[in-house]
Image (tube, rainbow, N blue to C red):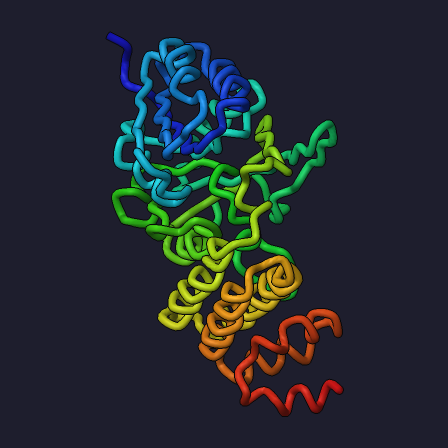
Length: 332
């Protein structure tokens, strides 16, 4: 019998069969002893050749389990299903169309163990066709245990809560035991937005480390980032979750400007995509965004609107509560 795994990797995927061989081959290049790794694959309602790929590659891993969803439940529920099966003390996430540089997971495993932190974060490389681009996690301090709240502010700079990618790091099991690691249920998109804020507000320690690397594939036709339908509106619920966390926090006054600034940035992005949405989805975007914007303290939102670029201001203005007409007049 193989010994217990050191680390569990959770891989949810739907119709990713063309990419899975690359992903599985990269997992086989992680630990010298393959029994150190547990693979929990969540087949999220795939209708392609995923079962055949799993049958080919599964026997290469001593600890290999498949969770099958008859119909797709989305990335959040898929990851949560994997968390319910993961056995190791340390846990990582990986999407089915991405892959890892050789030896990446042992670095994450050692960092969690040696630094004694709740979670670690790392850089990644985006892959768009033949083009690769290295992306730094926005924290210059590396290899030291830190208070996770150090990864939230300042509001005017990109920080670790602006880097929500679940696969960019690793997590100690105690976060799962404390209820901090699961994702908000039933999210199709933006599942990691409130999740990363919750970690940085309520975990006890984290670190950013240099690691061999994650290869994050962009421009995949089946990715929800390429689709303009109602599932994209989950970002509204995600920010309502963030706002609830901020409202309840002891440092709410300090945190609101960051949350509001992030909201306007993401709202600007989706407003720019709204022309490609169906009319009823656009209507729901407007109603939901106005509702979420109204949760931000008036003074905070007024300041963020005044400090926004003219392009951003014009893009988000239709999604602001009516009481902000005076801000409109002042800017014009």
